[in-house]
Length: 67
Image (cartoon, rainbow, N blue to C red; front, side, top):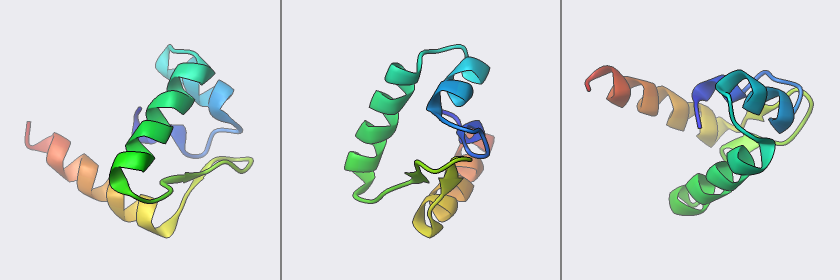
């Protein structure tokens, strides 16, 4: 899952951008949220990060920038 999922109308729209299926994206997101222990993305329209999810996305971007 990419941080680009936020702002899209739904998981189907986000999945189309990253070239996957909404089911696969939802599965990955649920797994990531389970591992993190909190909700990352609110399934609203448009998709929006929770406060904890926003902080998580910033940290993830920072970590990925160092690879």
